[in-house]
Length: 78
Image (cartoon, rainbow, N blue to C red; front, side):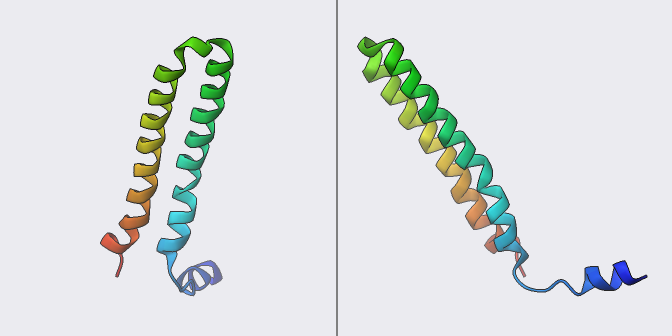
């Protein structure tokens, strides 16, 4: 019975906690994109233009996910 009362006692903005958790995924994605891009540039410097363009595109997609996660608490909030 006490677990139910403790669960009901949670107050505050749970949307901000959700966004904090949702920002982990794009953060990891950006790290993977630029880490692997750096390795690719070290292995094939002559393909720098193509690699850089793909890095920027992947970065934009990851950041779009982060921005969607920022907006969703406001859309579905109280």
